[in-house]
Image (cartoon, rainbow, N blue to C red; front, side, top):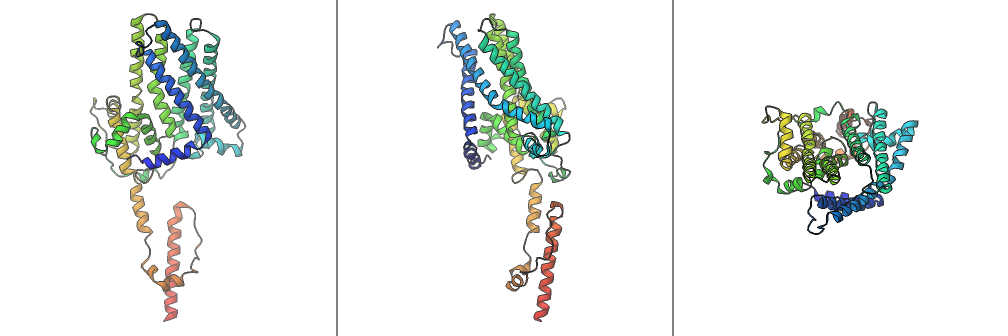
Length: 400
C-alpha cells in the first residue's frame, strides 16, 4: 500500500524549499506546453483551429515557449555543472565527499568513481550546449528558414545525452552497493505475491500503477536499491515521450499527409516500446532477489518479463510493488523480517531485571568498554549482560 501520510509529509517538507517551488512551477508550465503540442500535432484541435497555417503558427509559438522553458532550466543548472567539473578537475579531499553525495549511491566511495562521475558530468554539459544550439536556431531563424538537420540533431543530442547519463548513474558502479553481506540478507526462496492479473488484491495500488506509472515505478526501484528514484522517474518518462515528440516535430516539416501519418505512428510505436524499460528492471529485480521466472514466451524468462510490461505494464508494476511490500515492509532487503525478529528476541530483558534489588546493584556495572562496530555489537552486549549477572551474584552472596 502507498503510505499517503508519509508522501504528504514528504511533499510538505520538499515544497518548503524555494528552489523546489520554482521547479514545481516550471514542471507545470512544461506539462501544459507538452499537452498543447500533443493536441495540435494529433489534430484534436482541428475543429477549433481549422486553418492549417494557423495551426502551424500555434505549433511554432508553443515550441518557442517550450524552448524558452528548457533554456531557463539549463541556464539555472549549468553553473552548478561547471562547479562540479571544477571539483572533479582539482579533486581535493574536502570536495570529494560533496560530489559523491550527488552521483554516488548513499554518498559512498565507489571503484574508479572519479572517471565515472566525469563521464556523467560531461554528458550533462553536452545536453546544455545542445539546448543552447537549439535556442539559437529558434531565435535566429524563422520557421521556414531554420535548417532542419541542425534542429533535429540538437533535439536528438539533447534527449540522448541525459538518457545515457541517467542509465549510467543507475547501472554503473556509481549506483551499486558494494556490500558482501547484502546477499545474506535476502529471503530464502521468495515468491511473487499474487498473480499477474490479481489487481483486485489492492485496487488503490492497481490504479496508481496505471495512472502514475512513472512515479510508482521510480519509487519502487529506488527502495529496492536500483538507483535514484527521480532518475528512474525522469528516464522512464523520457523514453516514453521523447520518440513521439521527435517524430511529431519531423512530421511537421513534411507536407505529404501519408508520410506525416507514418512518422506519427512510428513515434507512437516507439513511445509504447519505452515500456520495455520497465521490463528490463523487472528482470533485474527477479535476478537480484531470486524470484521465480516465467518462461511463457518461447521459453525465455527475460523475454517474458519484457512482454508482460509491454502488454500489461500496470499489472506487472502492481505485482512488483506487492512483492516488495510483502518482503520489504520494514527494511531494504527481502530478508529483513527475519533479522528484525532475531533482534527482537535478542533484546528481551533478563528475568532478573524485574527485581528492584537487581536494578540497584547494577547502577555501577558498566565495566565493559562499548564497541561501536556493527559486526561486534552483539559481543559487546553479551559482555555487558555477563557483568550484570556477575555483579548480581556477588551482591546476593554478600547478603547471605
